[in-house]
Image 1 (cartoon, rainbow, N blue to C red):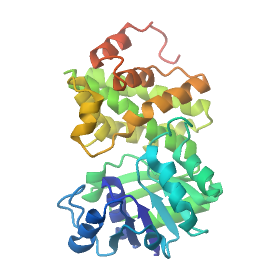
Image 2: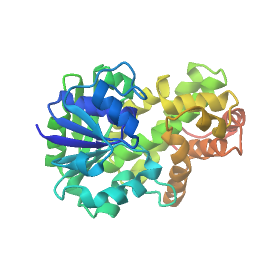
Image 3: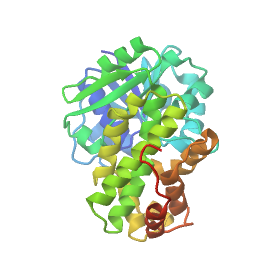
Image 4: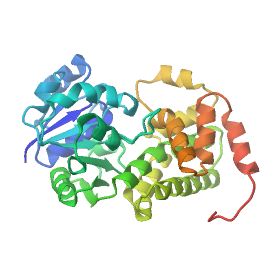
Length: 333
């Protein structure tokens, strides 16, 4: 179909490169580490992040960003959200002027409380017709194993969304289109915070009643904020909302749920960071989402409590006790 550049050689960037290749694209991954790029090129495998999974022949890797974007009409970003602005500032001059830029990231920037599509617009000056996001219940290892999955491709320009849908529709990956970029991004970012809370409940030894309660109230909290900012409520009921929330909160493959479990078992945030190279976006974005909720005037108890635990101001047990002790109210309030 064409050439796609994927910036990010982690598990999700690599897994989505498989999707793009299976859909008929030539894919070049930009990787921060030369050794990872060399392994992808020589062994057709990302042994650091997706060991045992063979990459298609049409996937290659490079540490040179100019080589990655050469000839690309789609540029995909899959790097940690909190370093994205700095990275994109260095890449913006080499992105082809007509290329569509796609964010796979599920975070909100600290300080600015900007979504990733807003960061793309600010740094590159691109219009909304060149900025898209992909979000849904897409755990990297399952996608890489080509287990059937669906997702949402969102762009303000519906024709661009349809083009990206065609370019990423593989035998195992079914994308749906949307024009609600805001709703998709908030659903993707907030579910990580909820997954941290669910993981803490699991780490404390609680069962399905507790986790189902947290998931449901987390969805309500997400929807309150998203709708207050202008999102379509149906987005939060779909793949980028409820679908992503259920997958991330339920699966042991989820980095954010695992991070929360470790907090529930008594590990500190610093100890967890030291034990893994994987990034749990919710641990980084919980404070920015809380700040966004405060600025919007939306009550966000889950984000507030998760932020307190991640920052070490509260234990996971104290968080759960505080949830139960909150004033009772009508469910729809």
